Length: 165
Length: 164
Image (cartoon, rainbow over all chains, first blue to last red; front, side):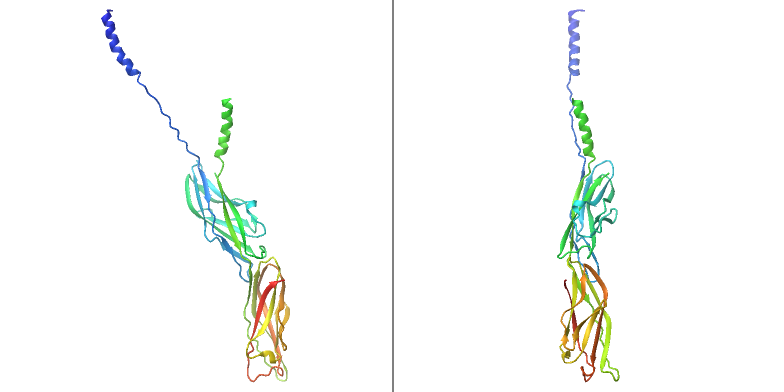
């Protein structure tokens, strides 16, 4: 091989080497999607109960409904239950309380003659997405002899809503 | 060491992911203190004499009804009091009448006038009385209550519920 041929060969190979050495990189993007299970239920209007002469029964419904809003993105359908827990049930009454969520499971009794009835499903089959402004209506009854009092009295009952799969 | 930390974290994440959400709504049930009494009017008591008798009556009417509801802690009683109408004035005659409830009779007006408030129902615990029959019985005499024509004497009976 003559010195000229060596030089020619190098001149051809060098540009090819430069092309193979072009740089590349990979950028990483992390998208963090939170598991959402957000429930909010507002307070309803006051249930006013007044008696009439000759009747032992008081009846009343909430002056305005509560509103239920819910979002979830879980893989399974969800349901919402409602219950009165011991700490949320004042003493000295025989109030029965029912709850009815619009488009839900119908009227459910959560207090009966002052006694807690456990968790009741009020809305079920909730697919991932949102439930907006569902009316939550309450109705109550009690009796004059079961709820004796000397002055107008407010009984504040706390209803706990829970989402489960 | 890193492996151990990871293995601890995974179960925790799993636990967190199955926690349900909850919210509490406050339902206010406002119960009125009730003390409701309603008594309907009775019918006219027609007192008519029989030949040869000085006594007229007694005549009883049982058309009035009493309904009562209370939810007080304290037992209640109901008192009744008669008041004669303005005209004609019955005080100069000998009309007397009494009221009966649940078999107990109390005189509300006698020939000497109104007897004042009388307890007609007592020891009423919280609850209700429904459609209780109120009977009025009246009597007089021909000599003690002379009239020149058929005459209506009007009385108003006031029923009041009070604490025992």
